[in-house]
Amino acid sequence: MEDLVKRDRKHIWHPFTQEKTAPPPIAIHKAQGAMLFGSQGEKYYDLISSWWVTFHGHCHPHIINAIKKQAEQLDHVIFAGHTHEPAVELVEKLQKLLPDSLERFFFSDNGSTSIEVALKMTHQFWINIGYPERKEFLALEGGYHGDTCGAMSVGSSCGFFTPFKNLMFPTTFIKYPDIWIGREDIEAQEESALTHLSLLLEKYPNRFSACILEPLVQGASGMRMVRPEFIENLIQLLRKYQILVIFDEVMTGFGRTGTMFAMDQLNTFPDIVCLSKGVSGGVLPIALTITNQKIYQSFLSEDIARSFLHGHSYTANPIGCAAGIASLELFEKASTIDQINTIETIHRKGLALLGKNECVKKPRVLGSISAFTVDKHIASQLSIYMLNEGFLIRPLGSEVYLIPPYCIDMNTLNDAYSLMNKALLELTCCNRL
Ligand SMILES: *Cc1c(COP(=O)(O)O)cnc(C)c1O
Image (cartoon, rainbow, N blue to C red; front, side, top):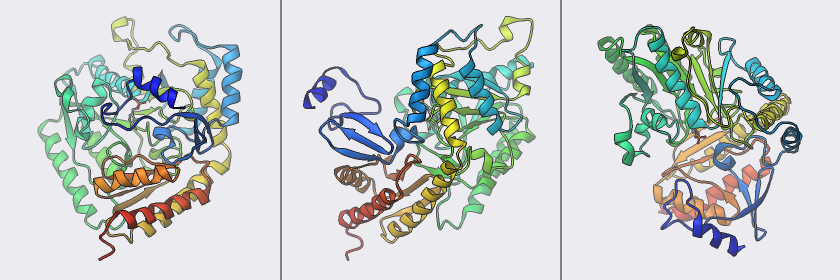
């Protein structure tokens, strides 16, 4: 449907796109499972879960039916002063999967807003309990937390936000000792990051309100992974100075890292966790900022000024919540986690194959996520090659990654690796000398 693309180009401004030079958008008119169907009969395997949001596959009948049913019953209602069954049921179901201490759920509608909520909550927490001097945030170098101003501020070291420097509040960044298969000096790197932070905190023990981080994997800065030990030691140090800990599990949540949440692989909990992409299984925009009693209690008062004066029009949209409940029901089937484990096995095999090409650097895997580093030019050629073969990938600069929906057929995933291997051999000359 060339006509559709023409109409698109006339009025639409696409996200993260240089409109002047970008190729025309690909028109998609249907999706099913791990497949996207173009309007001219083209088929693409969605190896990036449509920007990391599709979990059980596109148009999963169980989720779609739940949405249909809910849409006929209650479409939306103001969430201040009102409540509804889907919101309560979703939260009850999620609480069973989270550490007991994370028990207060604040709804919003996307990852960035869930982060803004967490930042504002922790900021006001210190004001509420009488320590307004604790107002700066700590974050990890390279972390990405969304595109709104607060989220940009704590993510400013990821490199996407240069024009907006003057809109951001200052944040202090902690070095990020990332790991890949074969990295040997990791312990020294971790120690250096922690020593650096320790010195800083000794000097400014009362400066910081909270530290925000993506546990185990940084998504947008290129699927960069750390060892759980590092996060545990970091949190131990932060706790020594009463600094609150915010986990941004917007990307890592809902099985991506091989466990329901990345924090399930740690011996420690945050004070706040932010969830979004997977909350509805990837069908409707919905998000949650979940906190503990300590923070929640500090907002209780006779005084309205101490309450959390924040909210979005579509807070706890009932249809989104119904999709969320249906998505969690799918997780309750053991096969989902088995499927994620199988994906991980294929990732490891696939990366071992690709790793034979000298141009492939820093191979890394965690759960359903795999990534490697190549020359930036090769990464973009690779993505064009793969698209022509019907496989959608979208490298982040020089970082190529796969993050498929859990329903992906294992032969398809194996094929994707064989094709990438073939493409890399054709695109790089270093193995032909
Ligand atoms: C995608 C993402 C966000 C932002 O979510 P949006 O819904 O795109 O606003 C925040 N944090 C992480 C880790 C993400 O991957």
